[in-house]
Length: 209
Image 1: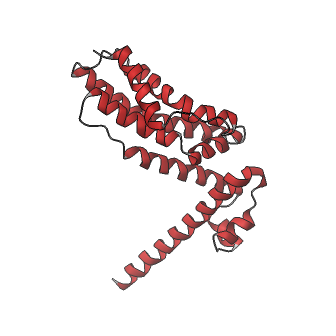
Image 2: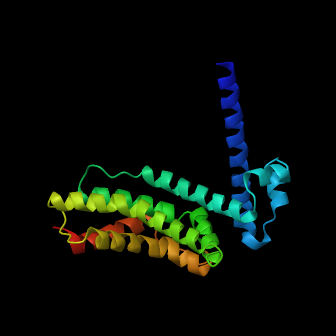
Image 3: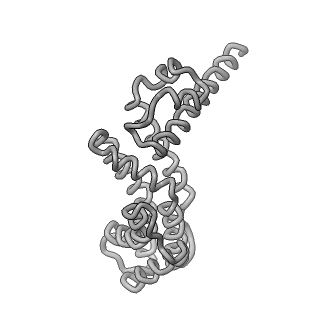
């Protein structure tokens, strides 16, 4: 029993050390970009030796991949909290659209996307996987909700995937793409709640039964 506890403690400490390295690396990659980020300052900030860091991550490329995987897992966890279940079509869609606007409007989310886009040539498969996962994490529950609302006769939708993409697009453009393209200089004048409500009203005008 004692050896089992010792082993569990060692594994926990191991995991905490790894998380500290990934957290610091995320911060440095965000601030400096991939090329300018150096391993030594990451190790120092995570209070581990450079040798320890290399034991977890043999190269900067491995570390960067771990940072993006970690961010992606964070995003999935955020999205898992938005599970639309019951209510009118308008209520459900506003709940979803507002959560999506809050998520896509988060400066950290934009920073991760910028980083992945900037390093796309170097990490093409990882970048594609990151974008595809983000899309499906949001799109899947929304398509399921749209299908349920269609079955209940509240919406008239032939292709839930198209309809989901249209609703997401109306939210993405003002809260995510405009700041992404302009380097955060152009921001939507409407609040996220207003953007979500406007998107849902337009959506219901097109698909409402």
